[in-house]
Length: 393
Image 1 (cartoon, rainbow, N blue to C red):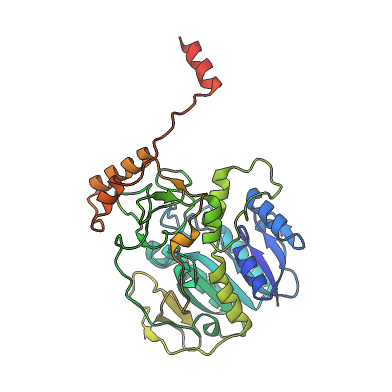
Image 2 (cartoon, rainbow, N blue to C red):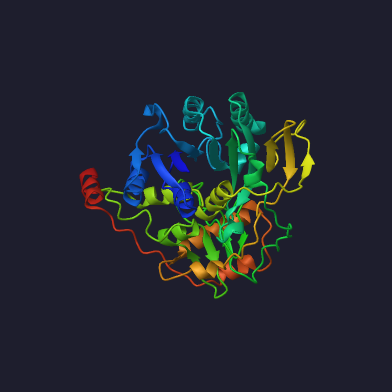
């Protein structure tokens, strides 16, 4: 079956679907740097620049994938919702779906959309699909359950005209496990740019990669390892932590690409192993398992899983890790490209934690104070700065 992708980013869906045996006909992405990645990594695929200029989805397309902009929907964004300046372009997606009647649509987006403004974004999405005659199912899935030591929970929605979408998302389940509380027995990932309101502790992994931080800078989280090193993964390590090969966003022929652009592209991407599981289930649908159902009426937010097949909308209780996959330790991703968190950054984080009064794992702050240190190197002032200072005299 052929695939077309819109809001394609750096091709997480396409890498996954290709690995499952699908062929991608079209990719659409308006970000120049990301489009350069797509052109370099998918040289035989038609790559377009703006979904608003797209009149039709290629004929014969059986699956449409979409990771539409989440800046207005995420916890780290402006929270303006589906009508925000970025996320509102999804309306164009529905115009294309209505014209093409593509049989299967797969969407990935941030789980915060389930609760933002009482879930109005999800309400809008499913109503549009229902008006077009599509059945839908969605499920929150965590990259940590698909072989990546990154705690990254995202909504995956499958809407179909003919196939029962539950046979894709609800044919697998594992027994829920009580995750151990964060402690110092394993490497401990955290957001070093935060501290006052949340830290994102992740045992033997990293919290979700983001396109930025409260400081407004692109940066990876840090990990406190058992040898007292506090390190940040490199861009190349983060590419692998999203399921891409190292260097996926580099050497694309795009001149002037900045490091911040690469961070943003990797932080925005769909995790490849998660998308591959969805692709493989589309290729070989399973039997719908028996899940506990919960009513949707009267809820202030949408549940982590739901569908509308047969007798209307119903919420279900389902794990965000549907398959039994061993997740490697974050230590397996550690190499010489990781960098030590500076003395200044580490002290700043400790100060913010103390100001915020958050509960920390036992011994965590002590371990940070005793951690290996890297003193900041003095900033070299530019010639422009020096000249301006001389003129001011």
